[in-house]
Image (cartoon, rainbow, N blue to C red; front, side, top):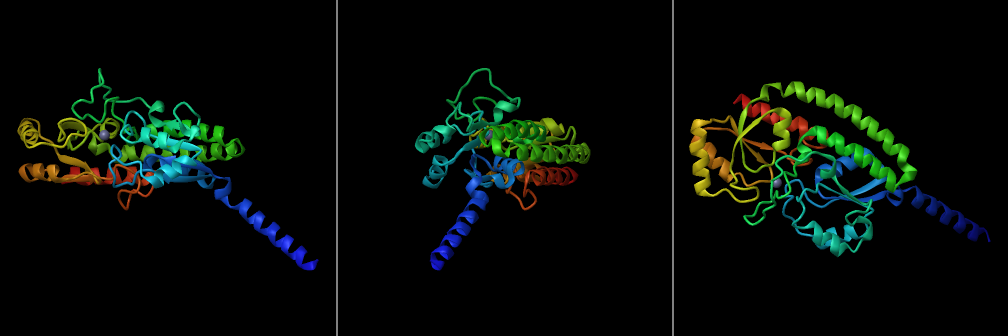
Length: 305
Ligand SMILES: [Zn+2]
């Protein structure tokens, strides 16, 4: 009898432990890109278990819906993606293969960041025929930190809708994040003052939001169309155009092949500045704050050369 009582007490203790494990109560979140995983962590802390579909050194326009990712999507309560066509090459397959009704478009478990920001470079007509990977406008909206604030507000509400028991905690964390973000915005604005008006060449249309925010002037693009590899003839045109309208640096994301930028650098003497593009891509970009700290530091360094 005594043994049974001991066993019962042990089982009760184990059950209590299991119930106390944060993972047991947490929302299961699949983030399409590392920046949204980082934002979920800011807003949900231990209340969310986050899985990221793309790594910081992967091209988010092009990944495969691999089996491990499909398994995560199958059990997810919430999917957080950029939208605006960025994931068109792989997300529809993932959603279909997941057979998870909760995360399908239109459901509360399907969160699209692009619905909460104003898109830049929206074309007058959609045309993918020449390989354009930005048919709905530029999707790289996370690189304007003011958009991060907009998306954070909507995401905090969505988290509360899906996990009402933790609503107060999401609200408190969102207020705390917002206070820290607003302070960082003011700091970044003053640090980046010397970048206003600086002309740059970009590899891919990765930075229009960053450029609009910091008032960088993008004078040339190495890709002839978004997502189309730079060709020799296009690079010659860029080189010729730079003679009339010079630039100060060439911007590439760490995940991109830098050969075209290096080709141009050899012929112009321009520095190639490699920027993190997302959280985790450089040692300095460990979280969303670090992403902008490191980006601005690298731009200032490039402009000073
Ligand atoms: Zn792109």
